[in-house]
Length: 256
Image (cartoon, rainbow, N blue to C red; front, side, top):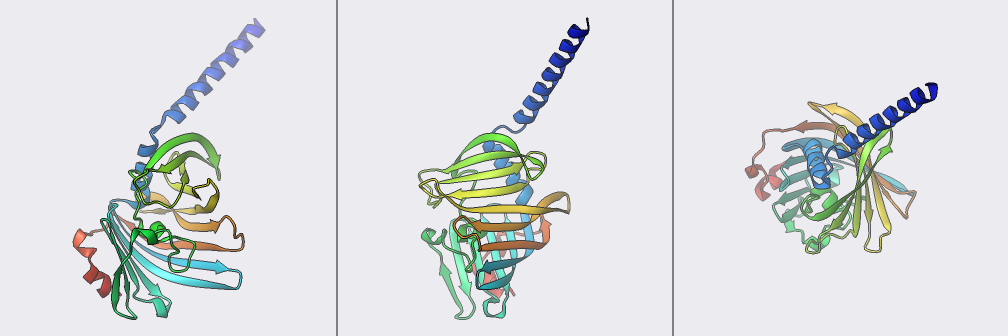
């Protein structure tokens, strides 16, 4: 009787654990839907933010302050507010067009797709990272690899392969997304030979309005351990009152 009782308890325990894991793993199994929900949490329908970017190099450190506005996935505007030599520099994405305004020469330049992989303001971010020319939902094929524990949180690990018709420099991108709150936790970018190029770590999660989001993004190049770029959010407002008319070349030049 004792053995039967113990065996029954073990079977029931294993069954309960299996059901729990199945329910956990089955939650949001479509990787494209997981990424779409993550985008909604991290960006909202619209967003305003104030940030500081610290560029760390072996012989120097440089700090850049900026403000940004987002509307959906097709409109973004970034304004540099410091240092003085870069103040007023702006970057605008409107649909498939991306523009840069340099106040020192009062000139606006359209950026070609070939420049999206280049360094943004001398940092470890690319133009695409900040201005977001590519779309993580429509421009990639997705595969949910597994769920694992990351920094004390259960996280979906998703592999993204660029679609053939998209001008994306990466050969592969891996994402870690928190299961419970759909916050982005980590990004790994790989080249066409499947070599790790850089890692983005998102942490210092804080409450802003009705959501919790990371307030620090650290980009670490794979081959330069003594270099990194740290983007820290001081203020984030979600679902702010913006319209498409705000994201114009004329407004990009007026903002201060």
